[in-house]
Amino acid sequence: MSHVGGQKRAAPFVTGSIMRHVVVMTLTGAVGLMALFMVDLVDLFFLSLLNDTEVTAAIGYAGTIVFSNLSVSIGCGIAAAALVARNVGAGDQERARQFATVRPPLQSTFGKALPRARTRPEPARATGASPPRPPNEQIPPEAATRTTKILHSTS
Image 1 (cartoon, rainbow, N blue to C red):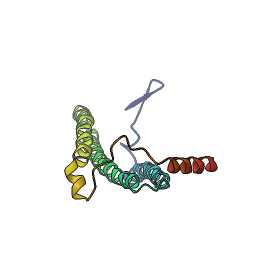
Image 2: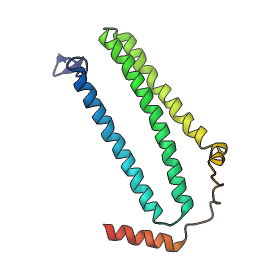
Image 3: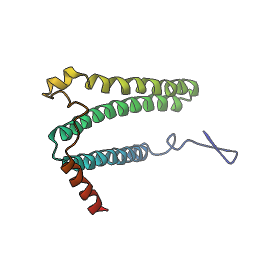
Image 4: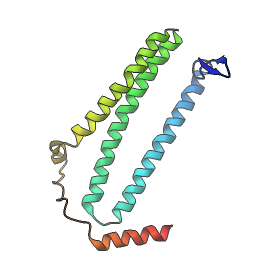
């Protein structure tokens, strides 16, 4: 229950058509995911203009890590939402609160562990990746100039 102007109001996803709730929640999540992947696509496009294969490959690899991490986070969120919803529907507010409280630390733990495991040298070598360039190696000046020209021409 939420309080609006001193009056109690039913939670929006507790009553009504289940199909409507599923559609609203699915479309909202889909729009968010598409926005994230569009940003990744734009990043990949502009970085590919540098003509540096290593940078492009690194961004592509990072995209798979982000996708994996996002998938685990969404899975944890769906599981938590199902458990909380079941208990809210059953009228057990305390148990629903417990499930809702456990989700953030659990999701945070998985969210931090997965990228760390994926960025260790062993999985990277298994995919054929080579060690990174030394930090003192800079992007060639002509590539930086070309990218600057492209960015100025699009604005």
